[in-house]
Structures are given as structure tokens and as C-alpha cells.
Length: 355
Image (tube, rainbow, N blue to C red):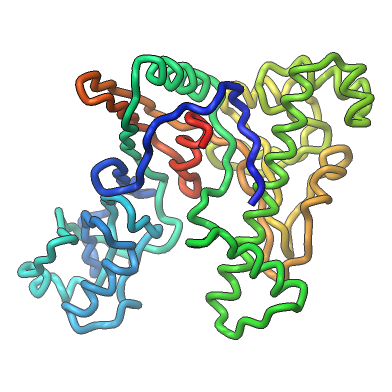
């Protein structure tokens, strides 16, 4: 897979980052407060070395029921210590009181009126520990975090989206091109989703490349290099945010709201800097709106008929509640932050250390 553009311009920071239960902790933040009443039992679980489906399978086997009886808001990684909420009918409450497992613990229980459904989460809090961080690396990481606090990060899909070998997107393209047949619906959809994600990442990387050129060169040079209208280049050059909006971009109110076409570049770029709205990128497919004009001239290079439903995805997000702690005696740098659902903590780290 091609190297993605990073908007921060520092060189690679040589530290150790490993996804494991000690150095990578994820805590799910529900979309709503559970009511405390109803026929569904909500289990707040803590798991290690288990994917969400693994944990559900263990509980289903213990209760002698189908895994489909469980509800969950999002799938959490195996290579982490994770805390999340899942639901099951409260008729199993008594049986679960004696449940014990070395890698899976029920921290607390409550009730709710509905089964937890996929997407019913606000986002996730992360704790990440970087190792072998000396004084120079510490300073560079703190500078990068300062930029992220100010400007946010590109909302790339993380490597987890592309499978263990990182090539699921190739299978997706082969399915679309008719070169590969996959009868299992869930696998077919996973491969095509990976290809949609690959196209999105490629588009976003291209837009960051253009944005960096606009920051680095004078408008006339950019006009000659990129063949963009000179008046638009001048407007983009004035934008303070490192990701440059262009005419025809589709924006979304942030952190949620309607999608709309940009009208006033100067005005909207200011609101983008204020975190009031963000640009969106295309997940190719059916029933999805395209950007227009100049923005579409770039977007169309990353558009394909996938056979699946398309969507618009935030191109940029703003991590919140960022804090850090440096343990000089161990050369550890610990960072904590919140991300909205669908965003990848590994991409925050990739932006910081330029993996």
C-alpha cells in the first residue's frame, strides 16, 4: 500500500509503539446513558487479548445461547485492553453472577429498554504508551501534539481496516472487476469496504499533498504545477488551516449534522478552523452525493462503482481531552485522548511519529 501523506512536516520520530494490553487501552463511550430499567441487561466488560466477537462467543457458550442474542455498539481490537458495553436479555442475569474468565471480566451491570445496536457509541477514549522516548523525542512528540490540539488530524482509515496482510482492498477490487468470486456475503462486503477505504485514503492523501504544495509555493508556481485556477489558489493560500478547502467541497457540521456544498471559501475555512464543520470524502458506491466543480475533478479519480452503498466520511477530525505524561526514569511517553466513532487511534500515533 502506498505511503500516506502526513500533514505535519517533521522527520520520523524513532520510538517504540506496540499494540498490547499494557500499552494500548480503549474505553468505549456510549452514545446515551443507560436507563437503568428494561428487559435488556447491559454488561460493562473489560477484555484483554480478545476481539469483541471472541468475548461474545465466550459468554454465549457459557450461557448456552446464540451469540446473536448479544448487542454491541462497536468492535474492539484484540491487541489491547478494552472496556465496552454489550447487552443481552436480563433473563441471563443470575447465571452471569458466577461467570469467571481470565481474559474477560464483567465490571458492572445495569438495564436498558433496548438492545445495544452497532453505532450506538459517541466514540472512544484511548491510553497509549510509547517507549524508548528520550529527551529529543519527547520534545518532538510534544510539538506534534501541540499541532494536533490546534489543527486536528486527517481521518484516515487505520491499517486494521485492510486485514492482517494489508491486502483485503485488492480482493475488493478484484471482486468489483469480476476477477474474483466470493460467495460468502459478509466476506465479500468486508473486501469491498476495504477497497472503499483504500480509495478514500488515497484521495485524502492527494488532498493533503496539494495542501502542502499550496503552503510551500507561490500562487503562480502552484497554478503552473497543478493547473488549478489562479484565483482559487490565491483563496486557498490565505487559509490558515493546513488542509485547504476548495470550491465544490462537501462539508459537514461537526461533530454531526447535515452535509452541504461549500459556497464561501474564506468564511467556511474559518469555521473549519473553529471546529464547527469539516470537509468530507467519498466512500464510493450507490446513493451517495458527490462533491462539485474543482473538488470533484480530484474526487472523480478515486470514484468507482463498487456495488455497495456509498457514504461521505469526515476527512478531518479533532481529538479531544488530549493529555500526556512523560516518565523520564523509564523513557515512557504516555498520551490520552478521545476520538469520535469511526476514527483510529493508530492514525493519531502515525501522524505523531510518522510510522
